[in-house]
Structures are given as C-alpha cells and as structure tokens.
Length: 470
Ligand SMILES: Cc1ncc(COP(=O)(O)O)c(C=O)c1O
Image 1 (spheres, rainbow, N blue to C red):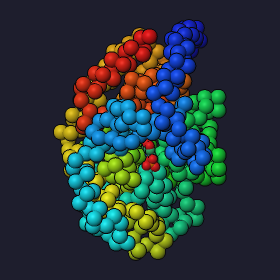
Image 2 (image 1 turned 180 degrees about the vertical axis):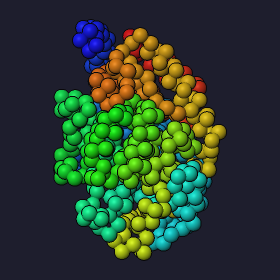
Image 3 (image 1 turned 30 degrees about the vertical axis):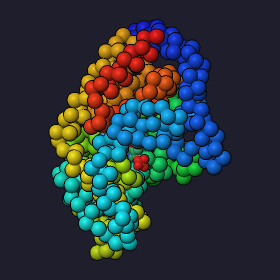
Image 4 (image 1 turned 60 degrees about the vertical axis):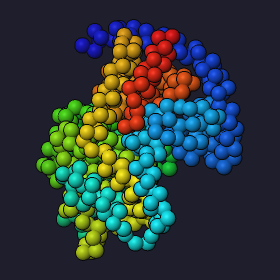
C-alpha cells in the first residue's frame, strides 16, 4: 500500500510546498509591517536583551522579529506598548478562561491584598479552592498545590515512583522508576519529561520504537528514568508495557496533546493505558494542565476514564502562578508524616492566598454552562477556520474552547504527522494576523474565553480568510 501511495504523497507535498511558498514570499512585507507598527516593542526588546539571554525570560513568548510588549489588558483585548489594541486568542497560554482582569477576580484580589499576600501558614482560601477542584475530579480525593504545571508534573512523577517504593525500595529491592511518556507531548520543564517534545523528524527513529531525543541540553539521560512511545498507538503501548511493566512507575499522558494540534487521542488509546495500569499496578497520570479547560471534569470526564493522578495548572489559579497534583489518597498520602520514607513536598508560595482567591473566583464562575458556551464558540471558530482552509494543505483541530491550524496536508493522528508542518508558514500566518490585531501563538494555536464574542471570532475568521486565500 505504501508504494502505491508514495507518488501521490510526493505530488501532494509539492502542491503543499507551492502553497506555503505564496505566503513565505511575502515574509519581508509582513515583517516590515510588524516592525513599523511596533517600534516601542522593538526598543523594549533591545533593553530586555541586556538582561535576559536572547531578550526574554520565557521561551514560548518569543516571536520574530521581536515579541509584542503589553501595557494593559481587559476582557478579550490587550493594549500593546505602541498603543495598538489587540484581540487576544491565547489568554496567557489558555490560563485566563474569564479573560483579562475579570471583575470577580479583581474584586477577590483587591479584597485579599490589603490582608496580606502570603503567610507562613495555611488559609481557608486554599482549602476552598481545593474543595472546588476535587468536586470536578471524581477519581481524586486529595490534592496538593504547587506553583506551576511543571512543578505539578515533577511531583506527580515523584509520587508515582514513591508509590512503588514506599520504603525507598520495592519488594525485589529494585524500585520501578521508568516514566512512559509520548512523543510530541510537552509536560513542562522538569528534566525527566523533557524528552522527545518536539524532536526533528530526522532524529526520531522507528515509528514503533521512537528514540528518546533530548529537548534541551543539560539532561542527565533516560536510563531507568523515562521511555518514549508513539502517541495514540495502543498496540505499541501494550507491547512495550507487557514487556517492561516491572520497570515502569507511571504512564504519563496529555489527554489533549497541545503540540499535536490540541488533539484528544482516540479513546481506545486511553482505555488501553488505563487497562495496562490496572493490570500491572502502574500509576496512570493525566496531565490536564491545559485540557482542564475543555470541560467541567476535564478531558477525563469527557472520555470517561479516570487516572490515578491528575496534574493541573493554568486556569485553576485565576491568572496567578499555580500547579496542582490531584489523585487517590493511597498515593498522595505518601506525603503525610506517618510515612517514614515520605514524599517531601514544599514550596514557599504553594496555595498562597492571592492565587487561591483568584482561582476560587474563577472556578466558581466556570460551571458546566460556562464550559458549554466556551465549547460552542470554540466549535464555531474551528468550523470557520476549517471552512476557510477547505482544499488547502491546512489541518484545523482542537477541542472545547481550543483550536489550532497546522500547516500540513497530513491529517493529524500522532506527533510525526504534526511534525510535517511548515512552521515558517504558521509563524508568518500568525504574524500576519497580529498585524491585523489578533493574537495567536506563532504555531497558530488559539482559544476563546468567556469574554470572547462571535463578533471577535468573525473578525478573526475574516482576517484568516484573506491571509490564506492571498
Ligand atoms: C500539558 C502541560 N503540562 C505542563 C505544562 C507546564 O506548565 P507551566 O508552564 O505552568 O510550568 C504545560 C504548559 O503549557 C502543559 O501544557
């Protein structure tokens, strides 16, 4: 079958390359227009470069020729350093489901700030937020706060390994320590998950036995720590786990893969992961740091599969730095003092009252009806983008309030499909949209929040249509 398809695939990819070349031929015009519109951002970026390596302190916000510095924001719009009003379709990496400076969130933090912003003591605000979150996660009866999604994942990995070695070793004297993660999944900046996040296709090895490719310099290696498998492939997962189960502490899954087009995998993949974890006593971790935005019970509620641990972040902090690990007490109670070889978990700002009141105000408004509205508008955006992209080598994917345009002719099923994307086309399309006043990521990911209107989406669609048809 593959030999019969190959000539077509080549012809198709030539057609796609010709299509992407049209926008790429306009690169200097698009970049020049951006530079003309953003002289203050350019000046700020020069100053930032004197203190930050490369001019930034967070990789994802960099875009060429320079990022847009923001002065203020409210609702669905931001005003940049040059006074331009921009419609936000990324809301600080999906973390602001009510939009910027929502009155309820502002009210909560204005009430809290004069009472003190952080204490070396617990507050009932963190307890109230924890209760609201556990209500949404029927499989979880315990939760711990952290300060970022990365930290939450790091702690989930630690809990999973400790679960297999409550006394520091397992019965056979060799603790299970391997974390299975999937090619193309991003789980934050912790070392043991910084493998094969966005590897080059030339480096990845066989599809059914991917090579673990370091995402960053400075890692200590994969041995006994991590194994990388293809996303969305239940057969390969089963084969690997059947063979290696006595080394595996956890299977870590992004149930909506951001870098694979904000794609929810086939349910059978998640079902297989759950079954394997049950069979071999492996801890199943769902990383819902982004996907908790998809519905009241996250993606786990939507697909009806309950993990042992869930990592959270972004929306639950109401715009403040946050992470959380939720799960069964049998695992998370390993952090209690009764355990001799307990899991230690500290953090100066864990559960701090500013985050807790903002998170609480946000989650109290994010009830099922709000998620339904978000999903409705997200679907409207996806449908409109797909309509504009019809017949073009572009894939429109996403779920709930989230959408992404990927510049490939290849329908998305796993990382290797997504990695065929023409990233330069995506970045230029995003920059051209920014010139029209719309903020998406340079990879053309976007989302709507409760403050986004059909009018905002219609305006985005009109701009997108004119760019992709040009
Ligand atoms: C699925 C997932 N896990 C973890 C993280 C890391 O979260 P943070 O940026 O808060 O460290 C992210 C961030 O985008 C994410 O998307």
